[in-house]
Image 1 (cartoon, rainbow, N blue to C red):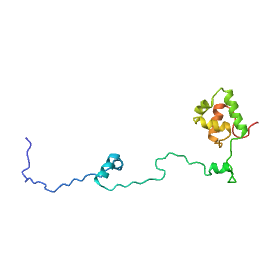
Image 2: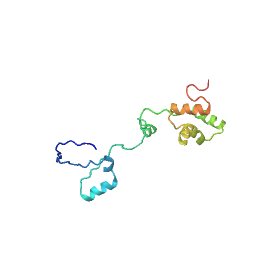
Image 3: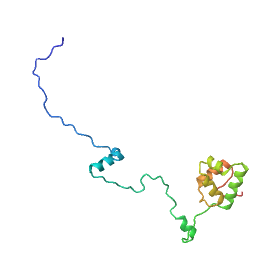
Length: 144
């Protein structure tokens, strides 16, 4: 048997205080929690953040509509006629539709349509993808 010490036994009577933890921010945004706070009469504040949660790409700094109307002196460069015809010719020779080309370059079909119609503003990355898939030169000097 283990032996016990013969000292006096004392008890600790200090009070222990337990506090509730603060609710998490995610829990405060929960619709149920908001409705419960509204019902109980608690103050509820809402803050609208500018462009919060939007996944929009920033567009060109110049408004294209203003450029089309001719109110501003500068114009956006469009796809040249030589490039348009080279894209169409190479695509037809490979017997591809616009949708198939768009899928291979990982872009939307509308992008290929805009390039072939000459309405798109040339993007070197897109042109490089088209060059690789179609096997033709679309950037730099064409015709040499």
